[in-house]
Image (tube, rainbow, N blue to C red; front, side):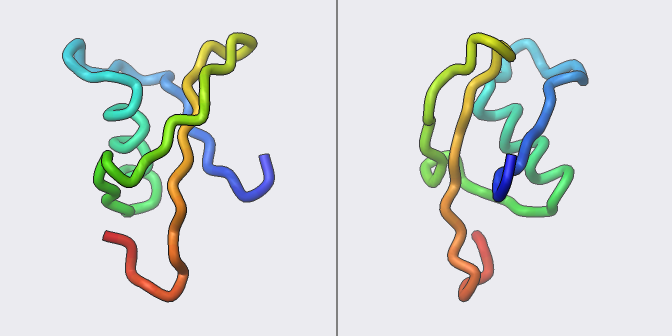
Length: 65
């Protein structure tokens, strides 16, 4: 998808982890970005691919925190 980061959940996530925590962990692992969960907006759930969809707005003028 254009301008979107996609992450699969192929690996095993900890049993006490939720989908948002798994998405933020994969984002950090793949990009080095550390994003606080309060900056994430839940968009919805895609039944076709059985996944949750989140968005994060980044300001390219600032270093993401």
